[in-house]
Image (tube, rainbow, N blue to C red; front, side, top):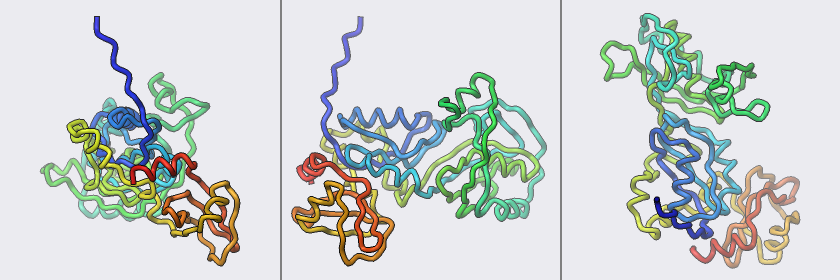
Length: 315
């Protein structure tokens, strides 16, 4: 009989870890693994990546979880490989082949679909996705052989390049670079592009190389984390305010900082701002986010006094 596994003593951990999610792992499995390695009390990820996808997955710990929505809403960049001429049930390599067609695609045809799929487009979410209907994920219906009606969603493709895969001499595969808004399904994009080319397609590889300004080059792998000491792992964490890089910084004196942290609006000679990161002057500390309207600083997501104190201890 195996000995019971030792219980991990959790601790408060605050910050952002940029993980290079490995192939075959779900985003939640990767999160739970890193949470265990850090012995963190509280953690959350910033949007799922398919198990067959790799790349940038920001993981938020402690106080950083309060600002994770910013990354969920952020634009993202992907590198994808699509196999032409073959459609699958899931639009990627995990699914069963459901159709094969001849491929007769020219370089000019690729450029034509770039123009067609750049800018605002509409997508029907795939059945094999985590999107919920009546409280159940779509993939649960799909596994039961049930197809449900899905509402088309508006997304934006900010940038798109498509070229024949140099490693495929038969020109039956293409490489795509996609810079897009939140909510974009790259599998669906690949499948729709395949239809526009008249041959069908499915994704064989997908890598997220950027999200909200965080790059793959900044990420650490699970393998590297496992080989580190606990102190080394903690040094991989970015500060909580790394999530607030696009925010205007506003600093309050002690009296106003205390009132703001209690959720009270402050008035001052400030210009209107949609995104503000608010700090206490002395000691210097992030308090939370806000927006300014008509000279009023209106609190948004706030750190708790105990979170601020814990963050200060390790700063």
